[in-house]
Image 1 (spheres, one colour):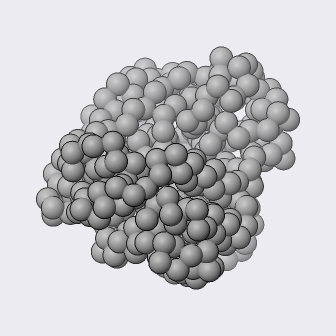
Image 2 (image 1 turned 30 degrees about the vertical axis):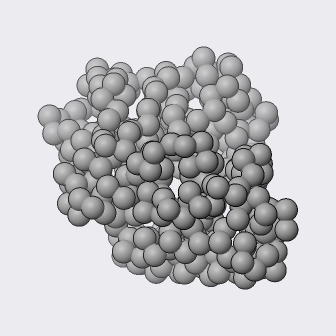
Length: 386
């Protein structure tokens, strides 16, 4: 496999705070023999998927990943015909998905030089899928690169891990996130400071500064514990319904953008060709994106609620106000901490985390939300969190 590179690092410059990972990947591309499989390891929101797109663009862009051409633009939109995303269907990546990858991998690239297969949450490969993937990793085609993205490499088959080059990605601190938001995205400094402190990672903080409704939604999420205290378990149904409406609105906005993309696809490839495999790939990706957006809404709300309980726990331990996430409500947090039961708060945080994991496995979202809010609103809980 060979790939030409240019001097323009535009695609790689999108990655912040991951200098070692960028150096490893750029050197691999520049060598002309980048290897056939990579394992990108790190928590969500640190640039793993963006690095995968930068690698895919660098391997296919005529200028080595210029960041401005049609190839780079389509790679970033995940609409390039030689860049594939494989995501879990439900709780797992299934063997049939990997078999389809194997069949596709041995075909010539559609229009580029290299086919790139990105496995999101690769630790969710089930045993049969892992073994199917291992076969193609043992005898890889020369014009294919596999990228496995995970935060839990220990859950992958060791023989799969051994056939990949590992690249680690690390979290950014709030100060660095704030700097990036201000210098690279022209964010208002006050908003950037809030987003960096509350977002927890760069991708979430960036969504906060790009979405004018994000601060109001976060304030509404932070009021959920108070509503449960005031109204008890019956409020759980109303809160779950409100979050379902919030998710539906986010999916609706995404659907409009997706329709525009599909129209561009039809214009570029023509109706006849677009009704075949290429169009199906676009439509399948759109379904995954809609599910991801819906899950992100629920996950964001639960993280906001968890940040309230965590701050109450920290306030009760006597930490200074500037060590809290929600510093703007420090007085309220300290009042809650004065009467809260620390053991109950710890249990609440564990249950919220359990619910977040369940939602990631495609459980029935509204029922899961009703259940967790019902639990957080029981009389004992209200006494503990008052």
